[in-house]
Length: 75
Length: 235
Image (cartoon, rainbow over all chains, first blue to last red; front, side, top):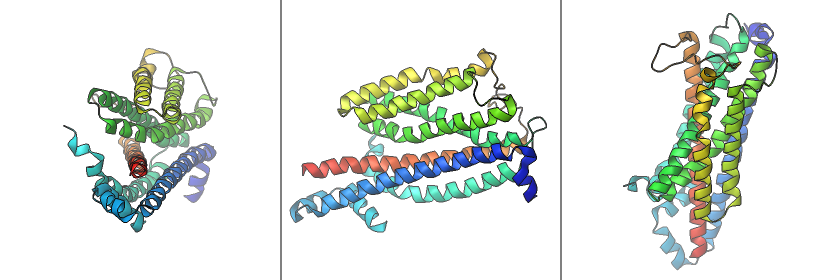
């Protein structure tokens, strides 16, 4: 069975390269998207940290800001 | 009317959803790959080369679906003056483009053992290449134009022109003599594909759809945080 899977009647090189290209593209897109997300999240946390307490409290009244900070802490 | 879609309200969901979607994607993809590579039968004519269908066809379907969704969202953004629609459209584009490239590359790989050539200027292949160019133009437009009003107009124009190519791609196999075979799967009439091949095909389509949803959510969250970063600059 393993031989069949590896040989595929002579088509294995085509089948495996098509599946391999697909999975590599997935991995590449996921990694790039994740890195972009982490970069923006870190920027947000750094900017938030540099705010004075009054402005930080004002910004914290927005639920989405709290969510971003909480998400950054969890990650 | 679209208050439920306000970023402030949905971020709570969109920020938590990716980990569950990722888990589901890995499960469905694992089952799909097992079915596609091991359990599904070989074709009587194409032998094992037919297995390429399980990555080629879902990629093509999803890239066409994403382009249609981007067009619909862009037009809705204009009609309802809602920036969030444009943001959603922008977040869908990267996965649509990647699926389009996957369809082209895996199609070329499939072409070699079945048609004897990597590339043919066949109507469907050419229209898929044109679709990739529209995806590229759409993504480039978001990168080069900074003014919101301008980028909204230009990207909508690109999608409205590009959507003409979607039915051409779909019906190209019926309108012209092409190397591609006519559609084997029909929603309204009986499909000519056997269930032992249809099942892995649908599983792989589900896995690919989950992956595009995952990328969409991650990209959408990134865009929302970008906006919030600009907001903090103004404080």
